[in-house]
Length: 296
Image (cartoon, rainbow, N blue to C red):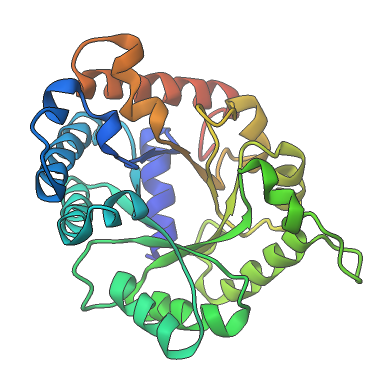
């Protein structure tokens, strides 16, 4: 069974298309944890402890986590080790792991990135990697080759959630398509050989919840492309806005929420991991009430 089918089956079993964004930075930690930090090493130690308790608290109610690599790289070697340990711990707890690195290059360099995150020698337990396809097919081919060899997946940037994304992505091409529409078509082509039993490919697209008209357009154009959907919560996206990303069976995407879960304790009070769990339960209800039963 392909990776994407296993992922979809877990979403159906949990009735929850949620991805917890472990975009953890020191400012998100409770004061008593911040007080223990004196350098990059102690920052990484506290972040790892925070992440593990979040994972322990939510692993039975959510199917996946997304780990933003930049949040770890800024702490140097200790931070990179923390990223790997977080990914491996999440995998041990049964979660699907998305590495949010937006990697891309050409030729050998793209191949090195693919091996580092998706290859059989990778030191971190990553299922999906976010990639930037704006260098074209030869910058993505090494990643798709590794996906085929190792049963891994990708999410390529198509229509991102940031306010200025339209400066490039909404420009019209000579053929009448927008850049994001054309990029979506490329993603569909890149993933054509990795389509599973549910009709979705392991090569998916990043489509922001904050641009519902464009998201609805992409869902109609790309029935076989699975969406990673950022923008819910702190960025302004809500369940009604992203409902269009899902098909008639309530499938087709996973919704990321980072700050709304990691920092829920600042609003709800109590232990940060208990508040994170409650935020996940509330998000699941919000999404399922809006999208309907998944896998119906």
